[in-house]
Image (cartoon, rainbow, N blue to C red; front, top):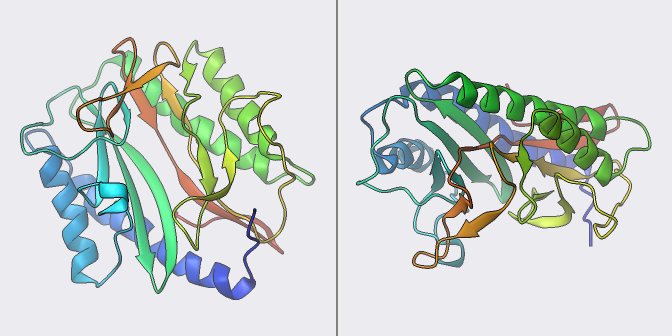
Length: 252
């Protein structure tokens, strides 16, 4: 069931989202070659802890960290590790949920470490463009969820990229994952509700340089990698539909 948020609830979610955007702005430039993915996680963890903010990812179904830090061919749910060191040419996605006064925000940024290859840079640029194409599609009067999917997949496939099908965006705000699911590819099997005032959604293209197929690590049960080992990219914003139209909440 899709929960339509009141103006008061959206105000609370907005506050959470602005804090998340502020955190990315302050910490993002600190992510650099030579850091471990554990070091990256601790920067965000400590920022939230110092401000007495909730970390919905930490402990969620046993997940052991405050953030997901996914490097190169890891699409999502990369578990931070002291043994995984960022190196020149890497691409790293940081996916975070933040909770403030019961309201949850969700966003992902992808960072290029040092000098990445032109191919990896293009993947990052196009994936971020896919995010904004999806947001633009959601903002149009009468739009439906699969309009987002069509906008994302059309641009990604134009560049020959694989659009991840096993994972998708979602409603957010009162819980970390709410209805509706927001796929990044079009299918007659996917629900297609109309986008309405009061909806708060995490729109998040997950785009692979090669095949769309992915595989989950059997040992840790979390890490999702591209099946062909090629790089993946992930960008995400939380948006709300208000009387004034669509608002991107997780940007300053």
